[in-house]
Image (tube, rainbow, N blue to C red; front, side):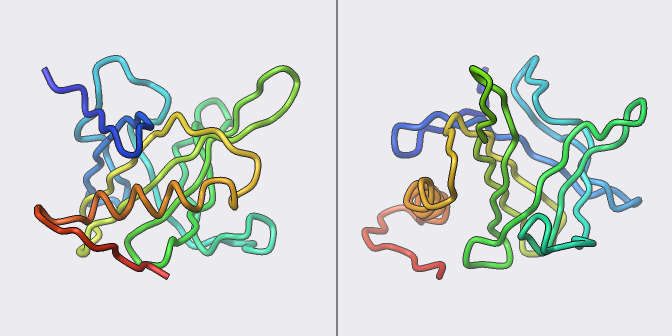
Length: 150
């Protein structure tokens, strides 16, 4: 059984795939068994206050008992199909962020979410990781060069 795990630059990631529904929500199509760190439905919207989250788009889950299941800014990474965001976690009294990578298909019908085990405080700490990760995803077989998304 395939667990939808990838190993890019020795960092484990878990891949989830969502499909766009008629009501403009992305519905979970595939995920590892018992993985519940992200909701079954996600929606991408333009940011109402981009100055607050420093991102042109947001991605969110539904509200459950008045609380959003999931919410993060979607920041483009040099392309209109590659984005990153984060999921806050609390450890030893400090807030840290878990890196999430998003790949939108050209027709916007499929959204791949890569839940990484990479933690960071500032975006500069993970820019090299993201470049390598996206390069490996886009890399055709037998390709030895590098893609430039910037």
